[in-house]
Length: 215
Ligand code: HEM
Image (cartoon, rainbow, N blue to C red):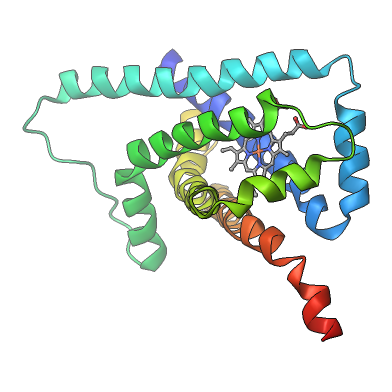
């Protein structure tokens, strides 16, 4: 029970980070100078290392606790138990059922992506004013572009199941608010999934836009 609570809390903290992160990196597309100013000022903040420690704890705690719970559940149910199925019907339900089945795979892909992503853009800090150029250099490699796109899809799928599961774990999914919370969770999953899938492509294609318009 307490494990499920912390899986939900760390998951929701990561979702909050992802929403802020999408807003931040979205600025690279809409307002490149504002994005550089934002990145420079962020790295001058004394609270940033504390925030990063919290993020690291949530980023490690969430998958470790989930693995622990999966192992305990497997032992309790036994190998012959069939997976739980939703009784609701409809296209969204099939997609959420698929997202639930793929949760270990989408989570593993996100962890792999994060290891690559942090080495590329966090460990090796670009000089002030060169953040966007560094992101674009990373995305020039086709395998990186594919990995970023796949991570966006994985984030959307992971959240599709995770958002609903988290509010249920925290006891917030009562019948009066269930429909609104379910809709909100799915909307957020769609927004973050589509945003992180399309943004790398949009960033790579962005320099071609003035050339096309001018030519
Ligand atoms: C369009 C896709 C993305 C772009 C262009 C992007 C860009 C960046 C950049 C430039 C940084 C360095 C920020 C800084 O240190 O100032 C960063 C850090 C980070 N990104 Fe992303 N990112 C993307 C997607 C993601 C996704 C999908 C996740 C999570 C699954 C993620 C998780 C992180 C984390 C945890 C950090 C470290 C934050 C910190 O320590 O301050 N990013 N990203």
